[in-house]
Length: 185
Image (tube, rainbow, N blue to C red; front, side, top):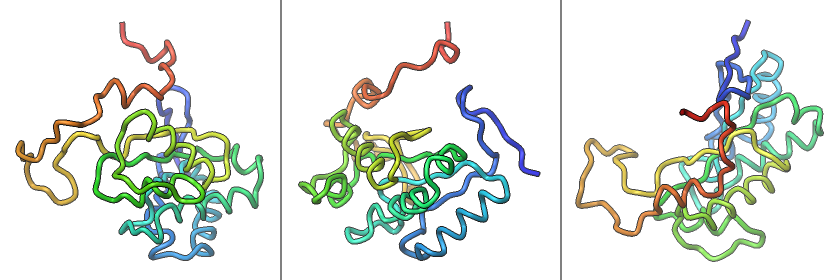
């Protein structure tokens, strides 16, 4: 029997979260729908995706994972959507302009993803469109806008810092204020 935990005080999620980052690259849409159905039957209610999935990220596949999930949700309607906790992520700075281009239909201008307010809101709208839903239960920053030692880096390298990173206040600006139950006093 799966155990559940409270996430952020309000969301009740299965301790097992279904990751989706290979759907559309290593897994077909049919396979992804079977995995979603199986997970739901076994009690998993927490599904994690991202605007840039599948990985490895490529211009021709970016957003495909969310599209697969969206078509699965559309088959089940609102009753299916109400059974899951759906999480997605906005991409921080990287040199992959096709991620930004994929946020609109038709694809827009290709510039590098950043975590400035305008891009976060556009990314969220793109995810909602691909997922065929009008809300996300959890929306996360995939990685920070500032330089960080990720993707195989062994150590932080100060020389790689970018002076134009999005200030944290701007990254948090599109987010609603936390409920009073989560505020520290």
